[in-house]
Length: 291
DNA sequence: AGCCAGGCTAAGA
DNA sequence: TCTTAGCATGGC
Image (cartoon, rainbow, N blue to C red; front, side, top):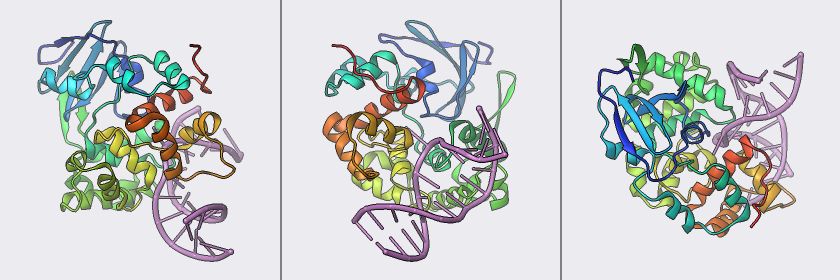
């Protein structure tokens, strides 16, 4: 696959849908290249390719199979996991449609900054800002005939001027990104420790950052910290919640929607959220699956 | 050319 | 405690 290292392969016992997994709005740095996908795992450039029952990768710095399994959540049985989810006809439809969509275990620091950037924006613009940020502040790595840029370290972002930050299209979010970077750099917030805290405590810690509200905090916890009960409520989630599960007169609070979701989907509501979110965006209104 | 986007903050009721 | 204007910017 054109790297300086040998390709590695692992056998898949369950389907893995890379298109749905990498391009469903949970990660922002993957890009398709024919049948392959270019991105980063464990902060090293990697090129992926998947078949029906195999996953192949080449990385700048070799990535152990364990880490690949961890990233794609291949260390646990997907079907078993989904069967633990309370039965719901709409969720069943989404799961059937995107069987093989997996919630990634992403880097918590990158998730924090990425979802701060995501507020009141759209996927194309989020991706653009993150790439430009990596270009001006991320370490350069040459791999597979290209120059890659790692996601910037906290110190690198903290030392950028506001003007430099704004040059990546961040707008008013620039100050939020800088302050988050500063707090992480001086140890006031430790993204990697959040997965070991109880959900409520981790939530409060992230929420304390300026520019981080309930929605962004839940994205960070769900996509970067393995807190599967986190239930981000963006416009799309609010859309399907209102169309399908819960229709109050006025705009329901995040907390209210969370409670509805937890009651219906249990402690893995966040995983359900991602299926429903992706289905609603990519396919359309939720329909009950015929039983 | 507007409209809208994986929202948040601060001000006012 | 619950609403709402304003916010920077760029895709589409």
